[in-house]
Image (cartoon, rainbow, N blue to C red; front, side, top):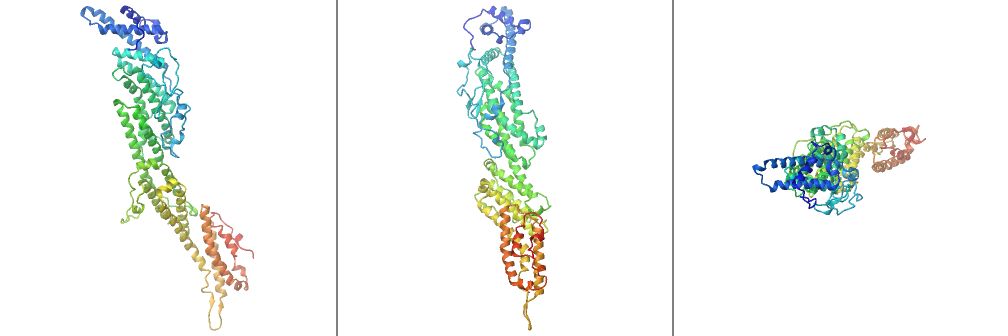
Length: 622
């Protein structure tokens, strides 16, 4: 028992001291608190209790001493009631919530595998608020707990891995609390001591929870929240959980050890759990509710943020809740982590199904990018940002269609072409495969085959560029499959040129223009005029329509314009050079030769810009 001084108080005097502070009979005792008075008065009261307790231990009470025994017991009950009030009063006077603002910024993120779009980017490493007294580790018996040191609260930190413990109560008050707790436990008032301690400290924890934004929500309440509201709460929860585990709970545990350690019956652990068990359940309920909520693809990345945050906190949870009586808390954290992992796997599968079954059938105007393509590629780019986590969670290959199946609603993926690639990489490739499959289906809703090919070319080219623009994504997809995709959009470009320009170029052939006979030979002017008219009409229609089509990528648009020019311009220049004189020497040549070579070159620059054009402004003046 903590010693006040070596002086002994006569037993009768001890009784008188205790009775003088009986608040049930003394107005003065009700108005004042012993431990708010001077040190000598405090020590005398504690010495009086010690003397009475010694008398109880050393005396075998006989029938003759029954009255004395009753007197001692009554005095002890009065003393314990008073100590309980004093204990509560000291605790309440230091039950203010911790300062969370600086702690939220200072909790170390060095142990996190921070990811570009994850919530972890909101945290910053900072050593500014790390302990000014890095080595101030307090233990029972150290001189720092002896009376006479500062009675003000000085926030100090010490590092235990990523844990930051702070002083919740000044050392001199801790000394008083330990003196009281020791005497209450010795007298058999362990349960009362634990209940008072837990009640007051839990209120302080609740106040800190409120400052951190940790709400009292049931699992049902959380699951009924709209995703936008829940999304914001997840980031707030991650920040709060780091402070709660690494600072709040760790500091509460340390406080219990300082007050109760070695007082028997695992008092420190009992008081710790009495204080934090309900708050821990409240904190974990949020992550638990998210882990068992409806699985939808848009939740995946926040689920991964939660998973990574909890995984990062798990060693600290195990360190703070390391006793046998805390096992249920450790188990709960591990189980939530497992459910979050399973939820992430399920959401990836849901995303794959959503891409495959996306039902929109209205063609996008001008054959430009489909919103699905943008969404899917942005999504898998984010997946690549989380490759470390997902690489550990995704351990099986995707479920694909079979080349031997009659099911035409699901594509196939030949895994033999992707030997050595991780399951996560195979899932990303599979998502691109089903996206392509869906886009091919959507292209069939275009009435113009040429526009359908532009649509496929645009979208596959976008996929290729997104892969090339992300080193992580490119590494997982692999250059082999990237080359395959590049071939697909180039194939679509070739098919477009065939579908559009073979007919136009057919007008510029020589066949059918020469007359042969016994009396005359040469060029049929009527056939030649018809040929020019056909070319003009076809080019005018193509120009009018395809200027409205859109290739959003500037380089791709220019490459296709150049390719068209390389085929059309030489053919037209040659045809015009061979047959122009036959038309110009006839009547109204401007009705047949409507385009100069330069006109065509200029007109081709209008293609795929997505704008209507004035046909007459592109023709040469006659």
